Length: 111
Image 1: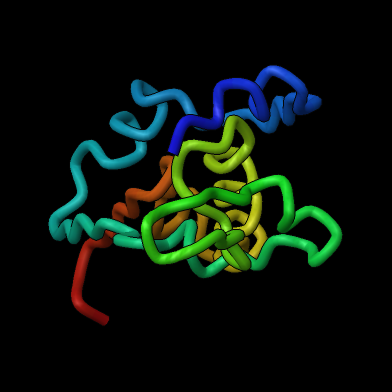
Image 2: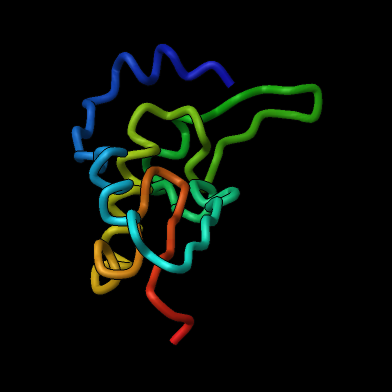
């Protein structure tokens, strides 16, 4: 999908992403790590019904609109980051980091 025109017309969400160097500092010296990819994570976030028509596209099988947030919308990463920060707020910085759709879980033991 080419969402350049939609992205130009969209008010930008400037939700701050973590700085990689700060994440690496928090990971430094930990005994155990697990790195996870939030594969298709953006597709788990529902688009408001009144906004779905903005994602309309046509293909040989018909005309469709996304009901879930596709990758490529300018605010997708900020929306996903905000959602993950809210979901994992009690773990962020102490045992987990989130960067866009990547997760780092870390600790001194498996407990």
